[in-house]
Length: 363
Image (cartoon, one colour):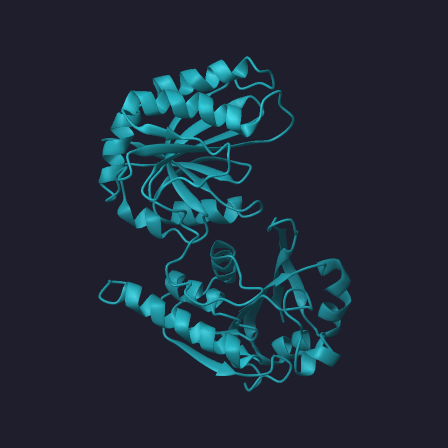
C-alpha cells in the first residue's frame, strides 16, 4: 500500500476544523501547526481537492529540523530541495490532472519569528535547486512579478527549527472558488464560510437560514458540505441578492452532472431585523452580520443591531443552533444574553489582519 502525505494550509484558528474535515474523509491526521494540517492517505484521492475548510492543498515533499534563525540554515533549505522525491510527487500530481504546463517553477515561503534571512532567500535556495533537478525554469518572486499560469508551485513553511517543503497539487489555491463570479464589499472568504457551516452540523432536511447572505458564500458552502439541506438566503440589499443568484448559477454550471448535484437555495430580499419566518421554524442560522464594518447595517438593524439576536432566538427551533462570525464579540455578550441565547463555543480566527470569532449560540 502506497502512503501519500499531504499538507493543508488554512486560516489561523481553523486548524482543528480543517483536521476534522480531513479525518471525515478517512485520512489519518498526523499533526497540526500554525495554519497547517499534515495528514496521510493510502492513495491519491481526487476528492481531497473538494476540501472546503482549507485554503490550499499540497503534497508533503520533505521536512528538516535544521531551519534555525541563522543564515547557515539556507544550506538546510538547499538540502531539503535536493533530497525531496520531487519527480515521484510530480507523478502523483498528474493523477489529479495537473502538470507544469508553463515549464517554470516558483516557490512561496513563510516563517514565524525573526530570522537572519528573508523569505526570498529561502525561496531562491529551494527554487534554484528544485528547478535544476526537474529541468524547469525558476521564477523568482523577489521583484513582485507573479509566476506564469501553469507554473509548478512549491511551498516552504518554517516554524521553530522545523521546515516543510510541499508541492501544490492544483494550479491555483483551493480557496479561489470558481463559482465566485460576482462580489460585493464584505464578501466572505470561502473556507471560513465553510467552517461556519461545518460547526453548525448541518444535515440533510434541516432548514438553514442566512439572514445577511450577501453574495451567498455561506449557503453555497453549506450546500456543498450538506447536500439535502433546505437553504434560505436573505439580504436587505437587492444588489447583493442578485450577486448571490449569479454565484449560485455559476456553481450550478460547475456541478451540473456531478454526483453531488447543486445545492438548492432560495434567495430573497429581506430584513434581518424582521425575518419573514415563523417562530421555532429554523434548525440553523449561519451568518456573517455586517456590524457597520465593510457593510453598513440596514433596515431594522440600522437603529437596533441587537435586534438580530432577538430575531434569531425567535425563529430557532428548540434544538436549533446559530453560528455567527462576530467582531468584538466581548462587546456583544450582553445583547446575546438579553435575547435569551446561550454561548456554546467561541473560536477566534485571523482574517486579513482582523480577529473575528466564530460563535455558536443556542436557545
